[in-house]
Amino acid sequence: MYLDLELYLSKVDGEFNELEKQIIDTHCIEMHIDSNKYQCELSLDEVFRKLEECTLEEKYIIFEV
Image 1: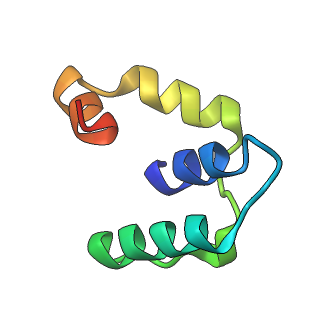
Image 2: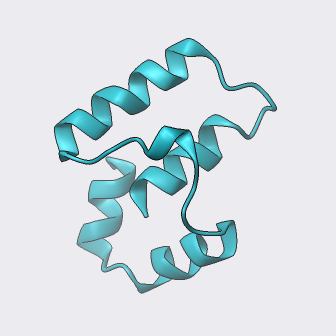
C-alpha cells in the first residue's frame, strides 16, 4: 500500500522523473520490496480505504509526522 501511495503521489503532477524513481528505489530497498516496475497494484480508492483502516501510529509512520 505504501509503494502504491508513493507512486500515485509521484505521478500527481503528470511527471515521473528519474529523481522520483531513485527515491522510490531507495524506499523499496529499505523495505525489502520490489518496485513492481513503478506500477500500482491497488487503485487509488483502495489505497485511501487502506489508509482509513490504519491506526494513528501507522499513519505517523507513513506520513513521518
